Image 1 (tube, rainbow, N blue to C red):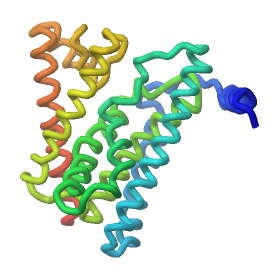
Image 2 (cartoon, one colour; image 1 turned 180 degrees about the vertical axis):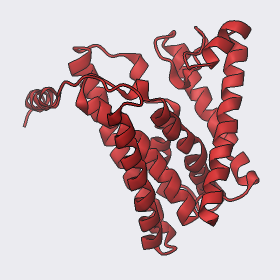
Image 3 (cartoon, rainbow, N blue to C red; image 1 turned 60 degrees about the vertical axis):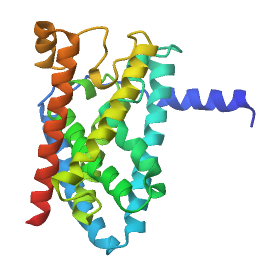
Length: 261
C-alpha cells in the first residue's frame, strides 16, 4: 500500500468518525452521569487490578505502560482529527499535547524502563498527585472537554477518567510513595515539565499555552486570570504553580488516607 493510499484511507476514517454533537453543558445530566459512572469504574478496576497483580511490580508497571499506549494512540488520533477535520489542514499549537494532563502519558510510556526504587516511586507519586489533580479538576470544570464532535468530547472525558484510574491504581498497589518526603521528590519533576511547557510557549511566540503559563498574556484559568490581571503575569504564574503543588499534595494525602481505610 502506497503512502498516498494510506493517507487517503486515514482521511476517510477521520471524516467517518466526525460525528457532530451539541457540546454538553458543564454539570448537565450527560456530564454528571458520565463522570460518576467513569469514576466508579476507575475505582473498581484499579482495586481489582491491584489485587490481580499480587505484589508483582513488573505486572503493575506493564499496566501503566498499556495506559500510556492507550493515551498515546488516542492523542495521535485526536491530533490528526483536529488537523484534518477541525482545522482543514492547519496545525493549531493550542492543542499541542503538553498540558499538565498530558504529562502522565509520557511517564507511563517510559514507566517500565525506570529503575526500581526512587525513580519509579517518584513517577508513580506524580501520577497519584499531579496526575490525579489534573484529572479531577478537568472533570469538575469540563468546559474545555466539551466539543461539537463526539470523538473529541469522549476523548477528553475518558482521558481524564483514565488519569484518575492510574492514580487509584498507583496508590492501591503501592507503587506511589506514602510519605510527605516521597511527594517532595515530585516537585522537581513537575517544574521540569513546567520548563518544557514554557519553552513550547516561547518558541511558538504565544501560539501555544501549555500549562496555562504563557508569558505573553494573563492566565486563562478561572480566579487566576483575575490574579494575573491584578498582580501581573509573572506573579500570577508563580501563585498558580504554587497552588497546583498545594492541590497535588492534598490529592496525594487524600489517596493515601483512602488506601489505609
